[in-house]
Amino acid sequence: MADKLTKNESSALKHWSEFGQKGEPQTTRVTPSGWKTTPYLTPITSSWDQCVPRSELSKLLNGFQPQEMEDKWFVYADGPDAQGQAVVHMFRSWTGRKMVEVKVQVPVDKEGGFVDADSSITEITWESNQERYRDQTKEGAKSMVKE
Image (cartoon, rainbow, N blue to C red; front, side, top):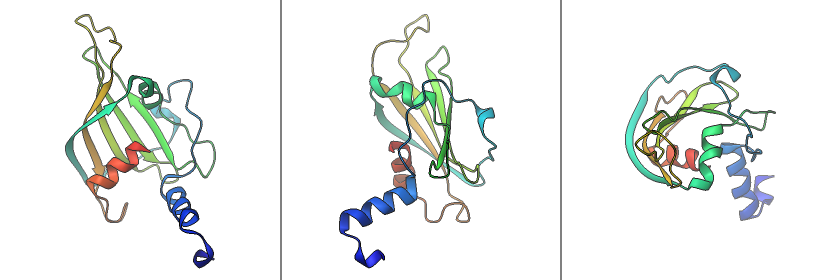
């Protein structure tokens, strides 16, 4: 069957296989208690300077609660705290295994109030254990986050 797919169909199937279907953005925050999860086995951390547009920040911080088998991710965030620091945690929904975590710097004023400006991802950590995710790279982990 795969040999009968067009290049675009094959690309779409590969994308769906890795990232799952596009879900609707959450309207409320997802909490860590919403899913059974397990921590990293072999994490690797690296700095990352990635802009998060102000219009996209709430989607990131609200997380994602899977509703069906095709929803491949469970995502929740801690923070931001008074210094504007937040951590977004990403897990595979089927296994509950932690795959990626990013630290986000949200702009705040001296009193800890939010400033109407873009945020930035400052650090990424990903699972490097070959039994959990074969041949994962820094660029592959970044691609997961951007999805």
